[in-house]
Length: 134
Image (cartoon, rainbow, N blue to C red; front, side):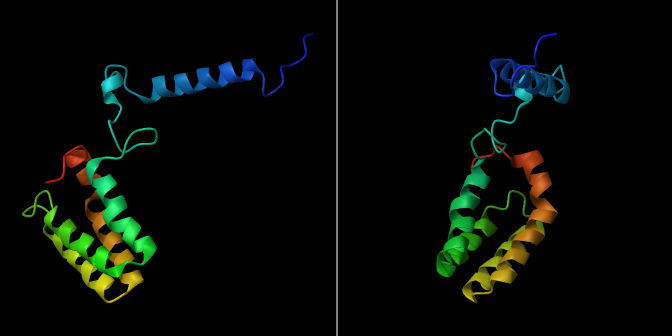
C-alpha cells in the first residue's frame, strides 16, 4: 500500500484547488456565468463606491477620533441618500451621527451607523451597490 501524501504536498494543493472550484461551481447558478460574480464589495474584489467612501470618510475619522472630519462625513452622507422619498430615515440617521460626532459621543455614532445599516444596507446593496457617488 502506498503511503499517504504529506499535507503540504502538491497533491493536497491540487485537491484544495479542486475543492474550491467545485464549491464555486455548486454555489453559483449555472446559467449565471462569470458575470454573476459581484464586480465589487466582496473579498478579492475592489470596494464598491459607497463602501470605499465610508471607509475613508466615516471609518477612518472615527478610528482617528477626528470628530470634525467625522461630522463632515456624516453631513455629506445625508446628501448621498439615493432615494430620499423611499428612504427618509437615511438622512436622519446620518445627521444623528453628525451631531453625535460633534458632541464626542462615540457610542451614539455607532448607534446611528447600526440603525442605518440595519434599515438600509441590504436594500442599498441590492439596488445601488455599483452606483457612482454624486
